[in-house]
Amino acid sequence: MNSGRPWRLGGWVGSLRFRLLAATLIGLSLAMVLAGVVLNGLFHDHVMRQFEKGLTQQLDQLTARLSFDAQGRAELDAQALSDPRWQRPYSGLYWQLDDVTVTPVRPGVLRSRSLWDTRLALPSDVLRDGEIHAHELPGPGDSRLRVLERTVRPEAVVGDGVRWRLSVAADLKDTHEAVAGFQRVLVASLAALLVLLLAAAWAQVALGLRPLRALQRGLQNLRDGRAPRLAGDFPNEVQPLVNDFNSVLDRHDEVVGRARTQAGNLAHALKTPLTVLDQASRQTETAGLAALVREQVQLARRHIDWHLARSRMAASTGLPGQRVPVVHTLQGLVRVMQRVHAERELTITLEDADERVQFAGEAQDLQEMLGNVLDNACQWAHSAVRIRVQPVAGMASGAMSGGVSGAASGMCRVAIEDDGPGMPAEQMPRVLQRGVRLDESVPGSGLGLAIVRELVDLYGGELQLQTPAQGRGLQVTLTLPAAAA
Figure 1 (cartoon, rainbow, N blue to C red):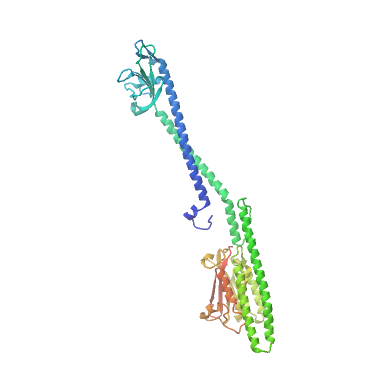
Figure 2: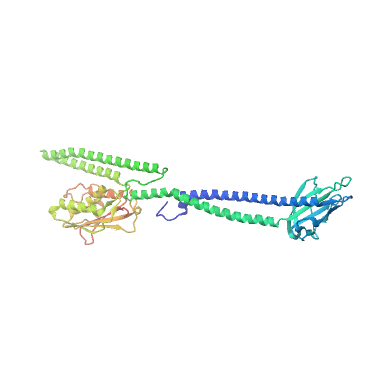
């Protein structure tokens, strides 16, 4: 779920989709292999049982056709056998009768015509009466034979020790081919089943993780200021997380609002007695005391303004879902400055201003920064103040370190230029320090540009002072995070 980021193997391996699909693939593969082994074994055993069952029937038929004379010699009418394969040479079905009364055993005393001029080399094993032994051994033409054998005793012969071994053999070629064909079909079927199950697992994972994509889009909308809260229909497993996150945002807003209220109350409570002291100092007859009180009052006001501004900006920056139109804010500030400096008949113009640019932060912070810079420009300008607003191409919000705003997808630049006396380049870094004023004759506390610099730093932006291209006046450029369009 790393949209917008380049594909990385580590990111893919660490994803939920990969973990779920990998676990499914391993489990299904093991299940398919186990099923293949079991089914193949069952089929092989079934085929061999059926094969041996047919051989047993052939053996029983031969046993029924076998007869003995009074001396115990065996006789078998091959023409009475129903299967024509007994008569066809090397047909794959054979029988053989061995005399095991003597030592060594006389093999092939009687045998099927299908054996032609060969004999079956059976192992020397001891067979009890009625017992059937099974063997696999080579046959004619490099074939593999399955052999069933049993011992036969002539009942009409007096005495014991006369024993014959009757064996039936069949070629395993057709059986092996049937098993191999079944294996091929089984492997193809299980492979197709595995692919279908993996496709079903992929669809299940995609549908199961789709709410997380909706949650991601909701967070992006919140971050970019398109929505104040996470909204949408989520599954029961995700909805509690959304509710808790929205509760955290509500709590954050409540804390920030309470902090601002307390800061405003503190400012009102402190400024009132300071104003009384200031008025009293102007009315006293002791000039030294009056100057001292005024000095202390101004110092206290500087500290109050400074700390209140810092506390407010620290509480407000970095909030998600903030976006403020920059040009609209500047238009309001321009109207205020035109009224404040009406007697000077200043010309304040917005030149090359992109109305689509939106600041990724709080409106009060933007007004604080632009208002201080614009007021400073109006105080020093002779006749004109020019303002330009443009997005910064190719610069992401993370390109500048130290910022706390996570809502920006780019940067914007606001340049405010006046035609006043300007300042030497070596003095520009000093004017950004707290309480520094280059001209004590102009009213002010020396905190305006310092507060602007603090706010810009908190938002991860940049504040630059430079001399305009025409060589006179001062240009203040603020580079700030911009919200996504």
